[in-house]
Image 1 (cartoon, rainbow over the protein chains, first blue to last red):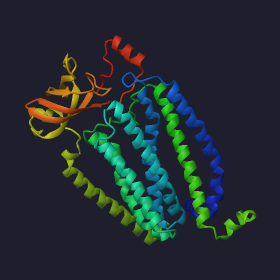
Image 2 (cartoon, helix red, strand yellow; image 1 turned 30 degrees about the vertical axis):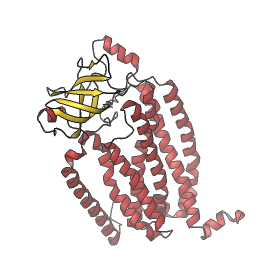
Image 3 (cartoon, rainbow over the protein chains, first blue to last red; image 1 turned 135 degrees about the horizontal axis):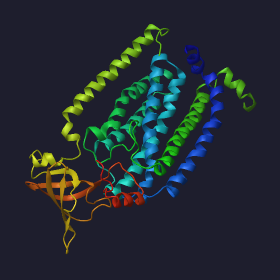
Image 4 (cartoon, each protein chain N blue to C red; image 1 turned 60 degrees about the horizontal axis):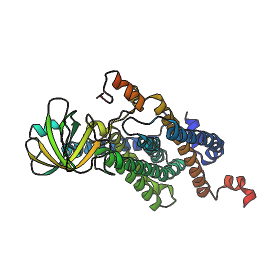
Length: 246
Length: 154
């Protein structure tokens, strides 16, 4: 286990191995997202209360789920970079932050667009919406702190501490609809109970959720590999690998 | 995870991080507890009936729109209805304006306005609260035909 950890922690090894994953992630993404979008927007049945407006959930729900799990992954990378001083983990945290911020923004915007016709308002300061806005600020804060510190790895410590402490927000987002009176409805899915919608509705949603995870890992890897190239531009292995282009 | 081969200074950092997160979590728990009633978006019917919701101030109240209680005015956009918690606590809401798409009997509602006298709420804004259930219209019709009101779950 520790050998594995040390091997993958080396930028050179990681760079060589992760390149092989890219086509699979791209394939998964390009297969599932168009399938989920077309299926959800055109073929899934309309809702008895909301009509066609509910279809925005095929973007909103995957974005909201991914926003929270990408934060957890970014914080995990921050934790590894704090404890083991791994350059790779620091780069992983830095490159995850902007993706997570955009995904959170998409979740907030699609939610607002749905809220106007359904609830009667774009925004209300209830616990779910407010804690999700804080998630966006946390992503932005980690990104800003990390960028301000410059390329040195030790500069990433403040950002990593913020990322790890911000983990506290995740259970608050998740349970906000149960702990307080909110305008946002409670979750339609749980591990222990049947989904609160039929399979014709949740199957395309599942395709979208898996699809956006594939997309996230794809884009994250692309950004991380670019970051490695930039940081290791003077190292021997990069020179050898790209000697034809120098 | 096995921490055997972990070096001492790394374990120290791990413990420090865990302590920091625990302390921040504890502090936040106290803050949220202290703010409890302010984080709730609205007062529930039982709070309104019990007199816990302040009178004469701009507040939000929420609950379910009682079936068969909606009365619309013929000449204006004024509408009146009962809001209930389905457990015996009910108050009246009066509102003039356009209601959101999802407003209907048996659905949740959140109203902003002033509690004028006991159990009468003068609303200036009505928001519909959606539940977490989704269903194709044919299924809802079939359920209704079968004697079970659609959306009647929670």
